[in-house]
Length: 114
Length: 114
Image 1 (cartoon, chains in turn orange, cyan):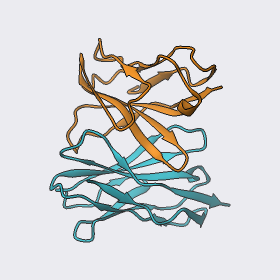
Image 2 (spheres, chains in turn red, brown):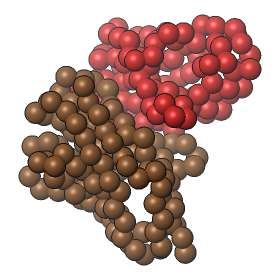
Image 3 (cartoon, chains in turn purple, brown):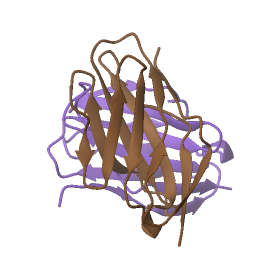
Image 4 (cartoon, helix red, strand yellow):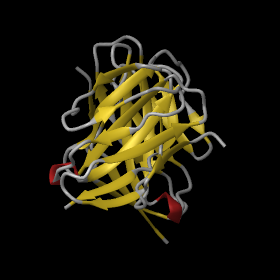
């Protein structure tokens, strides 16, 4: 089954404790990205990657890091989480970046930073 | 810049009835893609339907159809024969030729009653 898999789905952590949200897709997609969804602010892109070893900032990259060492994986790293990073996070992928390429989302990761 | 407007914060419909969710968009791109996603209360973001800017026919996927009126810059989602499981938040989104990201509207909450 074609899918984007994120882990963990639910996490409560403390301020300053480094965490990684993993993302893997099995569709051989070149394009991957991370979004966060917040009430009143909608979905905002954090980082994206056009292909292996190619990443770029989205609209809200502060406080996050990413890497793309393999085509299928695109982890999101919070080096020193803060409460304002409490959010619902989505990993997404598509075949490419053209307008006709559908973006498929993972199931979401609910992150709470206390 | 791209913009998606969903003017209906909430919609109510009875089971088995059809419902139309409105979406208008603004872009200067000639080539773009329009998407609808469903987000149930569990949080995942589910792709429903896609319409390309050059597609002359309206897209259909099962009970979902997209009423695309290019001159009016509208891309309304029509759900035929609503089911209780259709209760969710629905997002209209766009991907332009110069943007890798999706631009989302604020969403419409659909509630289907028995």
